[in-house]
Length: 498
Image 1 (cartoon, rainbow, N blue to C red):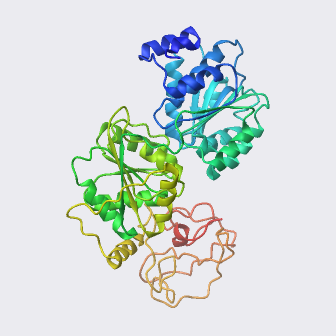
Image 2: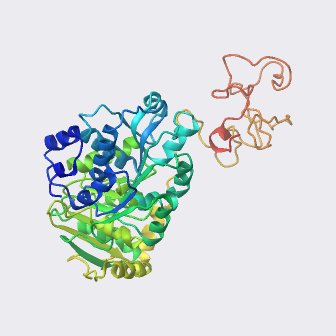
Image 3: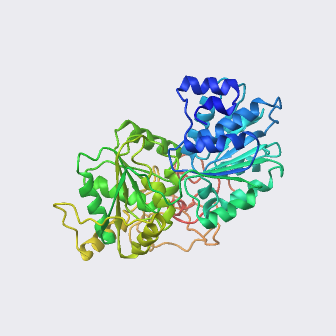
């Protein structure tokens, strides 16, 4: 089929495609849309940027147009699961674009934002729900959502959804779905172990593989530079000083590694941003927006977070850490050289990662060319690099929280006075120590609340247990609240809490 009109799609869907300027389907769309329109289960594999979202969105919208069924209250008819918030947003936007002339509703839910608004959006029921697994389960647990009305299940980036990080959540979700449903799985890569797991959720599926999983993008030039771990940060900084590198995506294996790379770049005057699961939703949105508009030309990401990055004009991909799953390498470097442009993928490889490189070359059936250090780069010695890494790992001491008392000096109690004397310099009298809800069974000293200088008048009676109400105003300790007067303040900021 050479035109979307050949599929027999509903007229409102064709009208939306015409308005968007889409006339010719991509290979994955040409092979996946017809069987999906008939209700068959399907597993589709194609490289990033080949139109997989439309490959499942178009037949879903067509099937919904053939039925007058309404979405159940606090339920949905179509459930699309995505591993990242960014990808979930992109999928929801695609449904809105392709279904603009259809009277159907779609909603996207993910973590990092207020759940109350999402609960209100789901209350009347929605036709299409795009969700990340964690927030979906939160909504189910709060009885704001039920899944017994789902007709179609979609897993986008199915290899990640079926991997260790999401499989437990996915198993729980699938148990709540009707046994009779259509399931559509799409991904850029599908390792054999993941493919075997996917078969458990599909019934007699149509297999669509437009390009082999091991095929790398044709217009991507690949290079590998051998460098010990401690030299990688300096090497990255040296490479990124080249003004010809317009927009670069840097991959690390871990979230903390991504943050370390950004801090290292900042030290040499190169602005970068990190995107990973530990970042809040506003932080992720700001980082992506800055990367898209060019105000930030370096984005550091983990593999899962990068599944939601659809940014045009990425000129370079740098594998700061080689992936331990070779299929991820194919996915990473496919982020550049899009829409007929050229791209360069540079990989750093240390001694431990040489095995990963061999796995990548075995999968792709091609050697990655080895290049030397760029001109003018002098790598730090292993000892120098170790010292730099050790300094980086040493975190600065936390400052006091706003309104907190300063930390005690040596020889002081948490309340701030010397252990062997009270504020007036007199020896500390034996006083009963009261626990104040700390929760660890340790008694805490009473705080002395009297002015400096000579004591006058009779000794002040103990407040704890004497039956007298707490003293108001004056010398009442600040921030004590709710546990009686005179509790020590210092441990409130540092000790364990009940």
